[in-house]
Length: 250
Ligand code: PXP
Image (cartoon, rainbow, N blue to C red):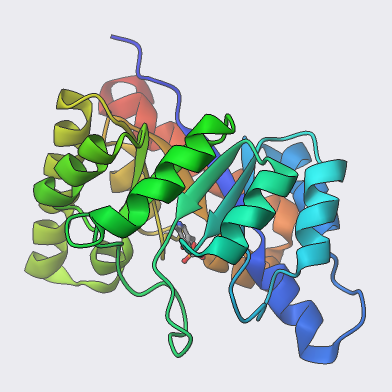
């Protein structure tokens, strides 16, 4: 069977992190998004955080106006972010948990315990024609809750897999495989992301029911050494190779 296509969403948050270290305009995340499109990205992802530590409101405005690729807006489920999403109408919105003190998104949303809070966001974004996804830890109960909420897409948090080593990493991979199969079984489109790099992307890309990966920090970091274009092209090639499977690679 031909494997399903696997999309690459390039997250450009940390281009803005570097820009913000000095203020000013360089490096410009919109320029990075345009370059990512040339290098083989299928979409651009940006997280407008409540504290605006990297992506700014103006960046979102410019991305919505200037890029051709679908824009995936990562956002906390807050009234302010909902208003911004409804104003710019990105192709997709990924609801993520957000804590002011965290360095990055530490875990998935609690779609089980937070269902009553999340319902309004899933509904209003969906009604505006924005494809909603929920960023979740790979747990069946969380996926079931996403389904009950009416979200069409889930994004599995791959951070624990990327950080683990040895047997623990195998166990985390098994959780991802099982959750991705469960997503398919209950009719959810399945994405994955967080912490992926050249050494971890292959086995996640090989999970056949995952159809999109969102990758940012590693690509921007690697760009320092080999350039953003080369980093994205290599990531794309590793994804495609893993997706093709061992038989086709041989
Ligand atoms: N997916 C989601 C929902 C995220 O919050 C992030 C981090 O912003 C990513 C993917 C990308 O993670 P990383 O920058 O570690 O590749």
